[in-house]
Image (cartoon, rainbow, N blue to C red; front, top):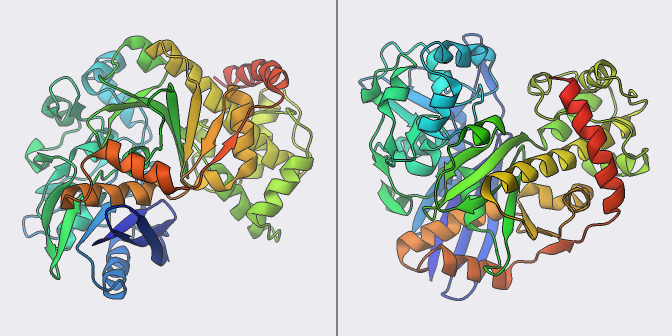
Length: 472
């Protein structure tokens, strides 16, 4: 029997999940959960790494006997170490506004089309390349992405796990290595970039426990746990604070059309390319709930869902990825302003605001899937919805309605399960990801949502497209 400990970090919480595998059945439970609240340092929004590391060590003390542990986190963010191995400062949060205007600085040296062809990433302000362009790099000797920073802080080796590197806009998909020429455009000394390493490798030990590098990017852990049917043309939607929707491909797609469609290539844990679009996800629901609470309206998520169900359908839409929705605060006002600016009816109550978010997300998923279909030549038969979004039945049903294909929701703990599975592969208990997916498919509960009212959704999709076009 193997016992492993998976640390799964999201943008608002961190969790420690302990699992046991006896060769047939996988059992797991959450043993520790803690908040991941950004702090301000030197005027920048940052991650409180010392606090998070303290919670990691606390969880190790709580977990009892385990054979290994591993980390997965969000993408793009990193810490910088000086020559003595000390953090130069807290890792900066991708939502910090320091990256405003940074892509334009890079475009003075290389065109967007050339940058995309060289790196394959959807061009977004948050990408590591643009963060480094804004970074004060003085004294930096080592760059470690967030999961690798946790590994190093527990005594593991310094390295750069490939799936997390592939989110950075500095990975060369053609040659499967760092693109040092692109990285240098940021002004960084490329010697700070660490050697690339594969998933399922041992990085060291902490208190006698093996530290394993799994897919450091949480999306790739979630996709690794996708209980897909090989006989179906499947897409995936990893749905949490961010929504990442796409499919597995054998090679990166680096065309100008792919760039224009804002699609991204990222490495999967199984060596395939996860071809996807980054969409602002449940962040919109989480943030408007915080705004409601600040106004004295203490809605639960279920309360919000019920309010949305009662609101008029297809009254107005937003582009979830419009820049104004990326920052904190004033979400109700931002939605109303967007609708007013684009010539739509303005939401008159909280239910209408919430429904606008839900329907806009479902429509944006359709928009993305259409682009992915055009660029891959695939007609998708099913969508696997993975992660926290599976707990939201309204979003699951609306996604099925919008796409016009069945949605298989689950597992809810896909990211943690993927982390666990990759540790078990490293320990030799599971042969590969295909075998791991078979184990997951045999025991995890999933729910199928079949499309309804597809004609109404198709008619409303035109209204959505006009709304997002008017905002350009």
